[in-house]
Length: 141
Image (cartoon, rainbow, N blue to C red; front, side):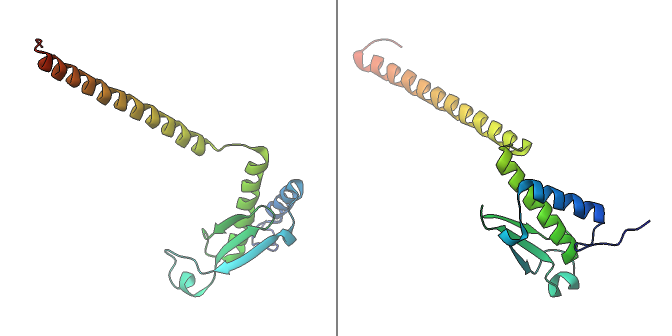
């Protein structure tokens, strides 16, 4: 059986789950600036003529979310609210996403690599300077 959609063109269960999540996070509709703009990318006439992209800004934290993944404005409104809840949840719980952790790990590895490369370059320079110093002193190589 198909359920009648509410405000966001999704099932009432999903809409209620989002409302419960917002209540748990302490989010209110009054704290949000909602703006509709034209989407970009593929989509043809619908993208060019209808403002289906949704931008939400949470005023107290300054977090902004933009959603243009679907062709309908109502569904993008729902998805943007869900993304905003995700971001605020991450901010409040201090949870670092796996992708960010992976990037940090790679950054640390590269920093270690560059230190090793610098040490290697310095070692060869010292070696060369010792050879030249030996030549000046009249010593053998």
